[in-house]
Image (cartoon, rainbow, N blue to C red; front, side, top):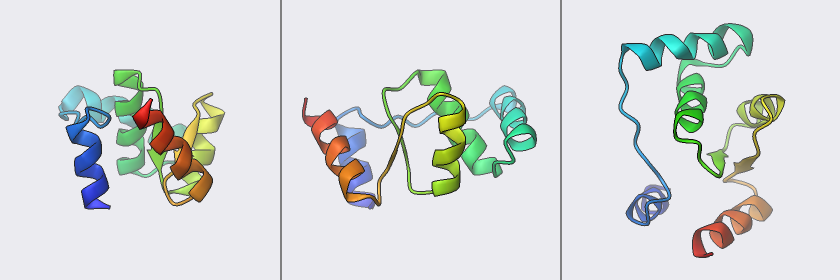
Length: 91
């Protein structure tokens, strides 16, 4: 998984978003309203900040939660979704 993460970062398909007080504070909305964990809330908020084309996760609860926000997500542990991710990165 680390190798895949590094490859995605090298190809600019993965961004690291710096955290500051404003980002952490904004994540509370998703913790309290959607009952997400702090790390999931930060992942969702980071995604929304950069307006990415794809939300990647392996947490089924998180993926269901983002669908309620109108966001398409991809389960990196699902073979069909993994194939879609690879195709997106090649195209």
